[in-house]
Length: 222
Image (tube, rainbow, N blue to C red):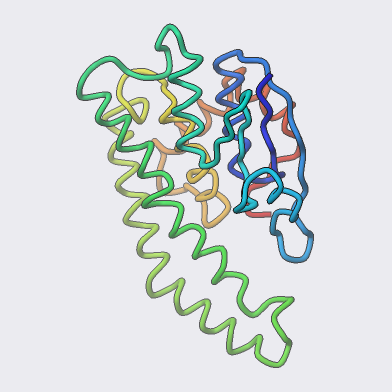
């Protein structure tokens, strides 16, 4: 039996989705973020030294990192190859988006979250105005411009492709789900109709809905 070490409101939600798409049985070990710091509890470090989620345990194998877990699940349990394209060009797109999600897009979204919290508790009240001004400046001058560049890039890609790896839904769409959902919480997708359509489509998938039922309340950026 596969065990998913699942942190609320985290990347591990897409691992549950991937497992539901594959119809692979699994169990969930649940963890809650600290309400003040929003960090994972120290108990996760007993599973993996970094104390991050997701972590997947399959027999004697323990895996961290969303991309590595998703690729492992596809290679191990997707016997029909339904979640990875066979076309050469589409496979290169698949590889690219599997890495782009965490390598290029998520760092900007994480920085926006962090700089958006400057000037708020638990920051000492005396320096909140200065910290808040610094955070707003970094967002206005750098992060928002970077997100606009990435948003336009993603929108252009989905104008020409229904799915990230081409004509068919794949594990690359699962991997891309978390950063795009994070984009919604960091400013929305109003300017990107194709991105909104893609997001609405994946969220309507039965496996996505089943994963929400299994994972519990899911609010990115809350």
